[in-house]
Amino acid sequence: MHGQRNKLCTKLSSTFLRKWWITIAFAVCLIILGILVACGFSALIRHIIDHQVALRQGGQTYGWWSKPPVEPKMSVYVYNVTNADEFLNNGSKPVLDELGPYVYTQTWEKVNIIQNRNGTLSYNLKKVYIFREDLSVGSEDDVVIVPNIPMLSATSQSKHAARFLRLAMASIMDILKIKPFVEVSVGQLLWGYEDPLLKLAKDVVPKEQKLPYEEFGLMYGKNSTSPDRITIFTGVKDITKFGIIDKYNGHSYLPHWVGDDCNRLNGTDGSIFPPHLTHNRTLHIYDKDLCRLLPLVFQKEVITKGGVKGYRFTPPETVFADVETHPENMCFCPAGEGSCAPNGLFNVSLCQYDSPIMLSFPHFYLADDSLRTAVEGISPPEKEKHQLFLDVQPDMGTTLRARARIQINLAVSQVVDIKQVANFPDIIFPIMWFEDGVDHLPDEITDLMNFASTVPPMAKQVLMIAFFLLGAVLLVMAVFCLIRGSNRQSTLHLEGSNYLATAQVDLAKKKAKENKQ
Ligand SMILES: *[C@@H]1O[C@H](CO)[C@@H](O)[C@H](O)[C@H]1NC(C)=O
Ligand SMILES: *[C@@H]1O[C@H](CO)[C@@H](O)[C@H](O)[C@H]1NC(C)=O
Ligand SMILES: *[C@@H]1O[C@H](CO)[C@@H](O)[C@H](O)[C@H]1NC(C)=O
Ligand SMILES: *[C@@H]1O[C@H](CO)[C@@H](O)[C@H](O)[C@H]1NC(C)=O
Ligand SMILES: *[C@@H]1O[C@H](CO)[C@@H](O)[C@H](O)[C@H]1NC(C)=O
Ligand SMILES: *[C@@H]1O[C@H](CO)[C@@H](O)[C@H](O)[C@H]1NC(C)=O
Ligand SMILES: *[C@@H]1O[C@H](CO)[C@@H](O)[C@H](O)[C@H]1NC(C)=O
Image 1 (cartoon, protein in one colour):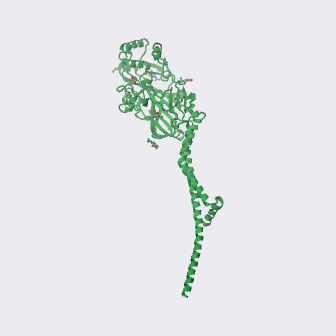
Image 2 (spheres, rainbow, N blue to C red):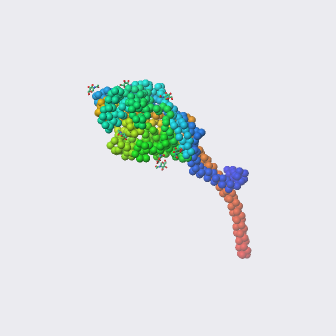
Image 3 (tube, rainbow, N blue to C red):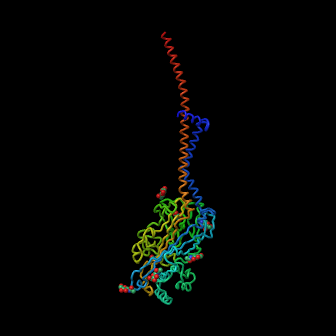
C-alpha cells in the first residue's frame, strides 16, 4: 500500500507530469473550467437556442414557420333552433340542439414572404379548409335553422334610426320574404349563401358604405389567401420580440377601442412565442376576428405527446368580465358606461360592420349562468371541453397543443315597429361555437425539443461533475505527493539536526567529564 502510493507519486512527478506543481496548475484549471460550466453553460445554450429559433431564411424553424407541418382541425358546433315558431309566436324560450362537430382539416402556409431590412418580415396567410366527413358527426349538407344574422343585424341597428326608416325596412322585408330564422345547410352557414338583404344593400347603398360581400357566411372568404398583410419580428435582432406582430396591414394599433392599451396588436399568432417562458409571463395573441389582443396566463405544467413538457396558458378569468367587476375592460366599451357588454361577453360589433356580434367562450364558460339558461339545450360549461388554452414548450416558445375555442352570439334588440321581428325579444342568441385545434407536432420537432430541453442540463451536470471531480482528485493527489515529498526532505533534515544535537550533547558530556577530572 505504502509502496504503491510512493510509486504513483514518483510516476506522477517523474513520468506523466514531471513536477507536482504542473499537476496542481492543471487541477486548478479543471476546477476553474468546472466553475465556468456551472456559471456560463446555460447562457451559452440559451444563446444557441435563440440563434436557432429566430426566423432566418433557409433555417429549420423558418421552414416550419412558413409551412407548418401540422394539421390543424377546426371543429364547428351549430346550435339548431328547434322551436322557432313557438319562440316567435308563443314567447317560449328558444330550444337549441347542439349539432356537430363538423370537422375541417386545415393547411396553413405563409405566402408572399418578404424579408425587411429591420429584422422583420411581411407575409400573407393562406388557409385551405377541407371538410372531413369521417371525423364529423353529420354532413356539411345538414339543414339547420338559425337566426337570420343579416336581417337581425339590420333591425337591431335600426333601433335608434327614424321610425319611417324602420317601417320602410319592414315593407322591404315583406316583399323579399325575409324571415327572422333561416333554413340553411351547415356548409352554407359557414362558407356563404346568397342573402337577399346583402344583395339589395350592394345594389342600393352608395359605393363607399357598401358591405364587402353579397353572400353571408360566418367563414366567408376564409378558405383562401387572406388579403391582410402581416409584418412580424423575426427575432434575429431581438429575440424577445420573436414572432410578435409589428404591423397589421400597415397599422401598429387597432382603430376600434379607447386608448393604446386596448388597441395594441403586438402579440403573436399563437403558434410561436419569444423563447424562455416563465410561469409569471403573460403571453398575448392577436386574432383579427377576435378584434383584440388576447392575454394568456400560466395555468399549469402539462406533458404532451412524446413526453414533451409544456406550460399551459389560458386567458385570465377576467378577460371578458364586465366593467363593474373588472374596470380595466372599460376601454373595450367605446359606447360608454351603460351599454357595455354583460359579464363574459365581448362586443365585436365595431369590427364586424356594426353587426351586433358578441363573442364568448363555448357554453358561456366564464360568463353569467343567466345567459346560458336564457335558452334551453346548452349544457353547463366544462373546463376541459370549453376552455381556451395553449400548451407551449417554454424553452423554445413553440406551441405544442392548442384549443382555440370561441362561441359566436347575436345580441338581438327588440324592434316593435318591424312586424317580422316584433316578437323577437332582447336576447343574446348563441349561433355556434368552434374549436381550432392542434393536437401535436410532428415527431421530428418534438424529438428536437426533447433533446433541447433535456440534453443541455444533463451535459452541464456531467461536465461540471467531471471537471470538479478530476480537478479535485488531481489536486488531492498532487498535494499528497507534495506533502510526502516535503515530509521526506524534512525527515532527512531532522535526522541531520538530531545527529548534530547528539554530537553537541556528546561534546557537552565530554566537556563535563573533563571538568570533573
Ligand atoms: C334542425 O332543426 C329542425 C327543426 O326542428 C329540424 O327539422 C332539422 O332536421 C334539424 N337539423 C338537424 C341536422 O338535426
Ligand atoms: C302556446 O302556449 C300555450 C300555453 O302557454 C299552449 O297551449 C300552445 O299549445 C302553445 N302553442 C304552440 C304553437 O306551441
Ligand atoms: C420595418 O420595415 C418594414 C418595411 O420597410 C416597415 O413596414 C416596418 O414598419 C418596419 N418596422 C420597424 C419596427 O421599423
Ligand atoms: C377550400 O378550397 C379548396 C380549393 O382551394 C377546395 O378544395 C375546398 O373544398 C374548399 N373547402 C371548403 C370548405 O369550401
Ligand atoms: C407591446 O407594446 C407595449 C408598448 O407599446 C409593451 O409594453 C408591451 O410589452 C408589448 N407587448 C409585447 C407582447 O411585446
Ligand atoms: C418571474 O419568475 C422568475 C423565475 O421564475 C423570477 O426570477 C422573476 O423575478 C419573476 N418576476 C416577477 C415579476 O415576479
Ligand atoms: C356593442 O358595441 C357597439 C359599438 O360600441 C354599441 O353601439 C352597441 O350598443 C354594443 N352592443 C351591446 C349589446 O352592448
